[in-house]
Amino acid sequence: MPSHRGGGLRASLDASVAEGAAAEVFAACAGGAVLTGWALFLGASPIVIGLLSALPLAAQIVQVPAAWLTQRIGAKPVTVAAIGAARLVWLPLVAVPFLHLAPATALLVFVAVVALASVLGVVGNNAWTVWMGDLVPGPVRGRFLARRMVYLTLAGTISSLAAGCALDALAPRGFKGETLGVLAAVACAAGIVSIRLLLAQQSPRGQEDSAPDWGDVARAVHDPRARPLLGYLLGWGAAVGISAGFFSFHMLANLEMAFMLVAAHAVIVAALRIVSAPAWGRLVDTLGARPVLVVCSFGISIVPLIWLFVTPDRLWPIAIEAVVSGTLWGGHGIAAFDLSIAVSPRRGRPFYLAAFAAAGGLGFAVSSTLAGLLAWALSAPLHALGSSWSEMHVLFLLSAIGRAGAAVLAVRIDEPAARGVPELARALLSILARRSVRLPRAGAAEV
Picture 1 (cartoon, rainbow, N blue to C red):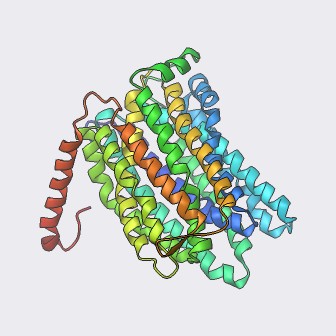
Picture 2 (cartoon, one colour; picture 1 turned 90 degrees about the horizontal axis):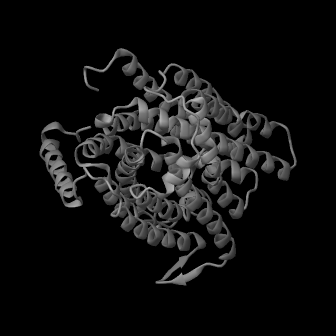
């Protein structure tokens, strides 16, 4: 960060990085493969798994009330209260494996916890995004997000690996439920740490004390500059939602991969995100977020196609998928976040951000729910090209087509100061060329 930054702001940004790392520990112990592990342990069907995948983004329907709370109460207090509650609500699951509840009751408790945590998370994330938009200066936002992503990825990778090792070591010995309960306890402990780190950060600069203006909701939807981004987020959320909730399920249930192997896949993805994040951050700050979003969206479109060629006896394509995902999803996240802030005016920003999140959440929730129903309906495998194609393969193919279509919409997003995609392509080639020259001399890729 530039040297002229005040000590209070610098300390707040450092605390934000640390809080993000604590959030990743929570996510590793309460989401991803562990969440799927809970679902399988409690006997959830593919329909329920599709519903679970839809819940976090179906909860986006509370975005407008969340924006009202942020504007009325303030970004920091809403962030602390909502995010803290979203992480501590997992406390009941610590006891579930030890209470010998009826399977249906235990599954109901699990779904209720995930649903409540999702709603609280939406409220907290809206306020947090507004907070960061005010706190982090625009000219260095991309680099700050990249630095934060590096530490978040490290924390998430180590935590996911530890959680996978614990499940692989203890589940075969009959302690799967107990291990999941302990992981839920660790998640809640990380939530307490994150609350402390949120409190350590300073309040937004220039925070408005005016009452919420409901007219900002209509302005966010009808703003000519915001509408292309809204359309992209709706289409992208729908395309990703078709398959996002089923990758872990496919690895664990169909490919019969161990939790440790699933964690190893996450490690590769994380390593590539760490290596690529600083470059993406610099590119967003210098060339603009729109070209980065366009390139990453088209690249990510091929990810579901790679899974069509993975079988229990042929797992190596997953390594290719991990490289593509790790390299591109980091750039996509930085660019999407930066664009959301840049397109939103200071006045009414909570409502603009609410509209963006609701668009992506609506698309994701609807498609994920429909994908669960489709997976349930396609129970018999299809035989084509000498291979057996399961219901998961159908979902992956549909998701790839949808992602490519949504990537086209990204081209229409308005960012006046942004450069073109060809200039970004030249910059990427230049970065790759410099790394290839330094690699023989340094013996390792530049980080």
